[in-house]
Amino acid sequence: MKYLDQEQVTRYAQIAAEIKKLEEQKSVLREELIAGFKEGLKCPSRGPYLLTLTYQERRTISWKDEFVKLAKDQLGKAWRKYQLSIENEAPVVHTPMLLPAVNPDYEAEAMAKRGAA
Image (tube, rainbow, N blue to C red; front, side, top):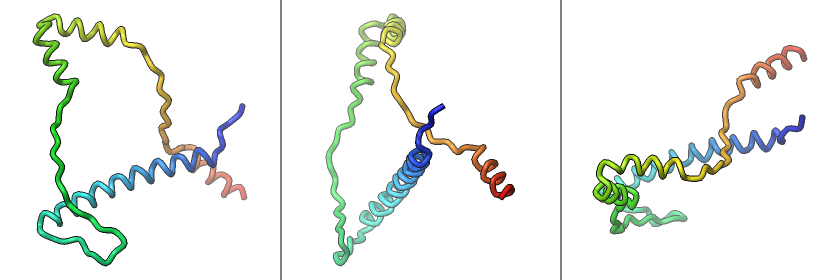
């Protein structure tokens, strides 16, 4: 049996975990910085980067929700039947996903090798 390269598998899982951790840290830090700006704090001007708090007008529209409302208005009780038929007729697409997980056997193997050495 052929296997993927273990170094690649390990590196992928490590990078995925690091990205998740960094995204979480970024989110927390972003909220702290915005709160500081709102309290009247200023960005220091001596460092390599500057931050400016600005606001952008946005309108949040969910076209999916709008379509559902329209369909329910137009179809009434037939909406659910229509929804089910659309869902059942939609093509199935197989999308590859890589889900890193800790190998529970790895530590046992490593311990056995250390004990045997």
